[in-house]
Length: 292
Image (tube, rainbow, N blue to C red):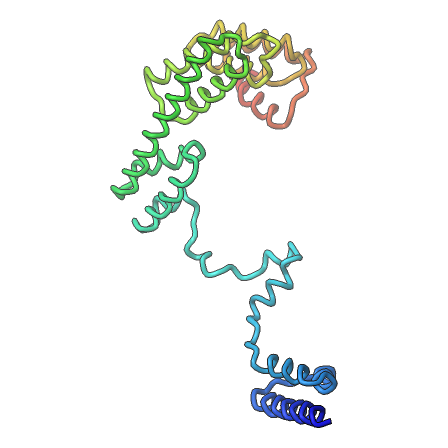
């Protein structure tokens, strides 16, 4: 009996304390909260005290929690504090302070250099010496590793000339290296010649549209227009309804300034029933400008 009296006394003492503190801290409880504190011995008033001393929630966090599931309303949430100091990497190398450029540079170094070659090439001419140094060193290392991988692939193909999977890997890596813009002059032409040799070794049934167009473009860059025309016509015979071989043929005639060949090709296209995409029509109109 005595223990029940002690528990009841402690319960009402805590309840009275919660009521006084709630009024003092201007925390108003609804009737549901008051009833909860009253009916639950000891723990009810303790929970009330916890709510009284709890810190006020951040309104911005509450707003974000409400809007998080609504994609439309979420776009109107006020941007965070970091938004005013962020900028695209391309612009940061020109307009930011040197310390910001260096931070951006270090972020690039943590990623795969092959995904950021253009940015690194831009950064190597930066007026900040440290930024330019890191960019140049990274590009040099990227070139070294790429050439080493290509040499390993060439060595493997020399031992296994029928390994078409490795040949395709070599072709993709070489094309990526050529497109990077790091190569110029003799080095660029040498890689294009090596690419041509491997493309020529591919069986016709393994030469899809992408590889066929790559072969044509590579031959054109090597100033072998006649071979490029033959390759384009071969691709056209395999895929007569596709627009890509026609566009490559038009590109060859335009770059070679062969108006007669372009006119003849236009006449053939009119009766070929080519399935043109919107982008393909734009390219066709560009190539045929002045002819029709």
